[in-house]
Image (tube, rainbow, N blue to C red; front, top):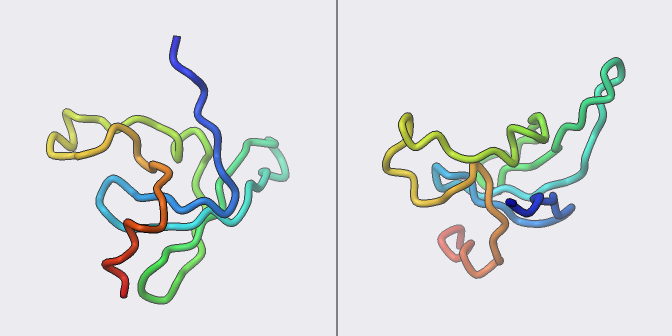
Length: 86
């Protein structure tokens, strides 16, 4: 059985397309109570984004993205991978 993945608040994540983001918090939809991840891009204008938690934690569709180098849409990373931002 696969271990449940958890979101690390203030953790740095790499998107499968290569950009980096920091998770700001978890938010809840006012009507459905569905969980959303609030995250900030670590490039450009540092925009704030919102994505359904299930989608944030989802596996990559390798049929659609056969060249993906990671298993999940977003993967927790350490800050040493951010050297390219300097």
